[in-house]
Image (cartoon, rainbow, N blue to C red; front, top):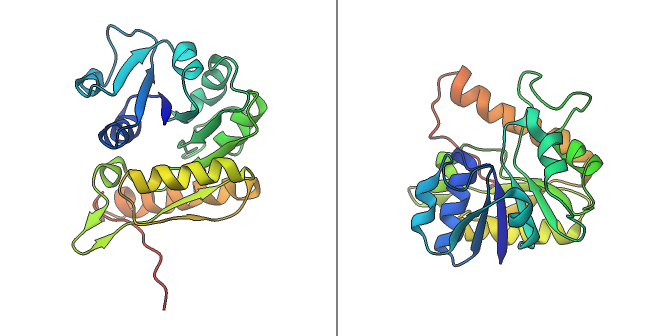
Length: 205
């Protein structure tokens, strides 16, 4: 799969690493391809750096993993995203997000041509994306969005990143729930002192 990743920090870098190892072609969308955070990602031959517009043009799937306040600016910079799946991994935390929006995914939908926008890879830390295994258990991932095409691709990419399963929690009306779930992890990990090495798994009896 050809995947554009916009945002090469912790989350974008972790997923770029996992997906490139699985053989996906990764197009990093950056402002300066000669100097950017995450240049070490280019050590994998499946990963190349491009302008944001060029990265998106070559991709079937776009992951947005930038700080939430940049959601509108980044969405506008993608170029023609019609027919492409956009995966939103951002979260508005403590009110820091795109002005006038309660979730980043809503901002993306309002400023792109794609209707295949889903929210995924936002509910846990980047360390769990690099390694979701805890002893003999493997963490799960979660996705929300109206687009069945988008959710199907997100599920496959979650499996390719090493997660045990990826469960749908509903449509676009569950974008806010996904961000609340993310804040639940952040609260436990950072504010309650549990540390980053915690994660969630759906257990069935």
